[in-house]
Length: 118
Image (cartoon, rainbow, N blue to C red; front, side, top):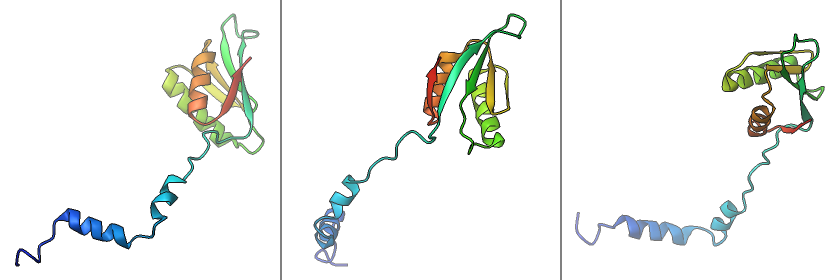
């Protein structure tokens, strides 16, 4: 190979850059990030003490009818694992043992849910 036939990678890149349409770089700049909220319904996080022998429980209610029990149960499993606490999911609600409203709110927002503490 002769020295005149050898091209540096910068020269090859410059040659490719000239072949691209003028607005090709603008398309990538216009790409919008998807919204962080995945679910339409707003969840309510409440603290409940009654009927639990004096123990507190954080209850998450307000799931949409489109949410099936399996999705709610998998969300409950994620919350229980990340919080390191017990709980359950039944009847369209999630129960987390103890007063963990602030922690649950942060985790639900990370998961893409709209939520509020009551």
